[in-house]
Length: 380
Image (cartoon, rainbow, N blue to C red):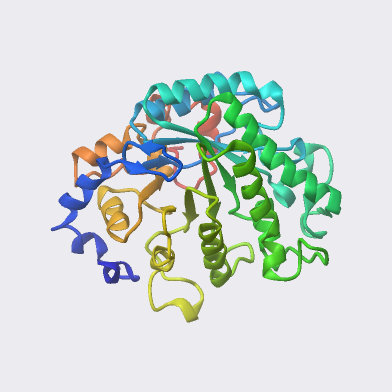
């Protein structure tokens, strides 16, 4: 079956005859090694929406958006990226998890998501050099100084504090009642910056060799597991190819996390789940297949990237992926899991979407305005 995903443009037609059996699998439970059971194969992607309060407290708009997806039968409902330090804020109206002042909102949100039989998970985030200076009121921080973004290099004490604050964010998430957390190590944010040889020019134990560049991520994950225990979901989001991440190192990071026995799942943002790798040396198979070939042991694997139709879901699951992560289609349809489970021919509404449709799907005016920055997404 994997050969059908190796960059072949006809994957939808090829899967048409078998997709009914594949789509029927979307309602099967996924059981994580920590003991949690996800009722189906759908995870809501952690989606930027700018709907919360500027101090990081949860807003009613964000509460409504997320709980509507839990009611729409996502097996795992993940928050947007929640920053673990005030200086790590990446966008206006971002949800925070860096202060006990945020607990009240998170307790409310976790309880409501879990009431819909959906796993409730916080994504832990720090934007690093991608934190806008005008938003945080000072120069952003980075593993090394970066002239293009005006970022300053972190001191060793700041790196250690960063590690501890990721762990503290997880502890606070567990206190709020969430089932687990995901460490955001993708998309050029701070953990990704440490992993990247293009941005990490440090000469201490957190820079230089691959092992040193990966040290921060491993210390964060180990600390979360030690502080939150075995009965807590721990995931990591990674992305290949962009932001100075080489595919070989991205795969090595995944395998090292699997071998550490510290994580329940890996969430790989592929940008496009059906493309070939950009690096010519790896183009013998699809980007997705490289990750599916990992020796995963008891670690679950999910991917994101242009998974929109029921045929897309069937193709990804048939490629030996445990569950799918849905972003754009979840914005368009709060009950996307139900629609796919009931209709093997399901396709989301065509774009651009009307503002009325998006409002009916639980997006606030602020979120709709944010989505207007996505070319062709919102009707003008």
